[in-house]
Amino acid sequence: MSEHEPVTSPDQHKPGHPRAARIGAAVSALILLSMLIGNHRGRVEDVFLIIGAVLLVLALVGDWVLRRNGLR
View 1 (tube, rainbow, N blue to C red):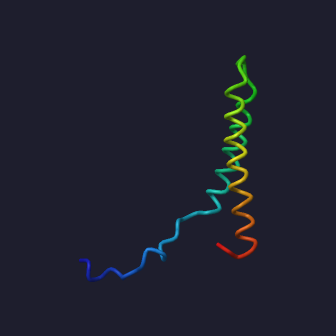
View 2: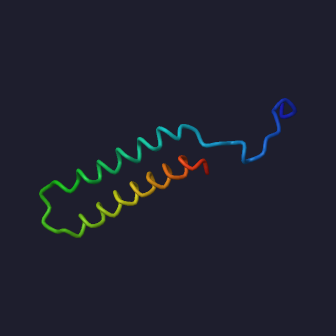
């Protein structure tokens, strides 16, 4: 069976659906920010929600810059 499979290198296997990953990251950041609205009293969890959303947005901006410059 294996003699019929093409020989490929690992760099030829690209992850699928990068656009869906970008949309998922943006939606996740919005969901994290929407969790700021609630009936909680402490603000410690707000810090972690904001940090998570900011990290996702920074990853999206970095991906956009790399794609714009043709480095990806």
